[in-house]
Length: 256
Ligand code: PEP
Image 1 (cartoon, rainbow, N blue to C red):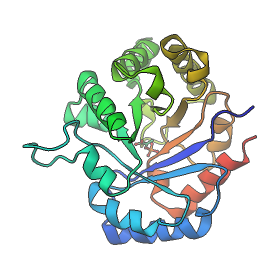
Image 2 (image 1 turned 90 degrees about the vertical axis):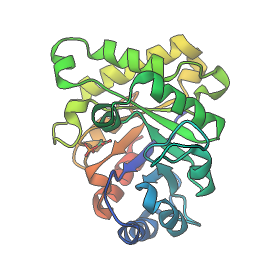
Image 3 (image 1 turned 90 degrees about the horizontal axis):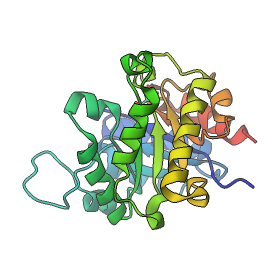
Image 4 (image 1 turned 45 degrees about the horizontal axis):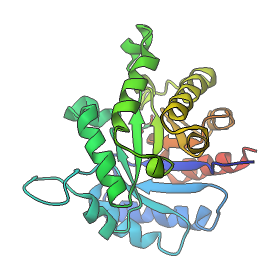
């Protein structure tokens, strides 16, 4: 029995004006806006959320943000909150992306507050975890992933755990063209699933989707997506063009 529908999520990062974003969404809607085999999510920058949300109205595409603050409002210059994202009809939010961790100093406890705030506001968090090259070469990849996962999910109860999405993104594979081998990726995904079993029990752990992220492309997606514990992809570069993103959705739909 298939418990988990595949999810292909596009992280546009700091790319595309609202106009460019609407053009991309329009192409996606035409190509894959009616299919229901795979969940498809686009995550524009904050400035493009409203217009992208309008452009995907009436389609099966979903809208997500790339970050948020954990407070609902207040003196946090430059920040955006969960209720603000909900007001634009976002349903998902990427949290703890490695670029947020490395470039903006985000740490596990801070990310955890965001995860809890997202859930409180009916936003599905996509919690990103993953090791650097030095950590992998030092033999501590699994330990790093475990720490990030457990700290990120601190205080998330059994009633909400299955709405969380985890993204395993080896930092050395993001935007580098170096993809983790299917064995490397499946090993970490199975490890994450095992940690979720310990935290929440088997039936909940089997419902949590674990995405792979890191230079996923139409050419390498079929093999990655056919792994037992890889439930979709968090896509950076290949999400910026309709053709490659649509091909990734088709690759996910083709996996039996
Ligand atoms: C990402 O940033 O989440 C990502 C996976 O990027 P890319 O696909 O470009 O490696």
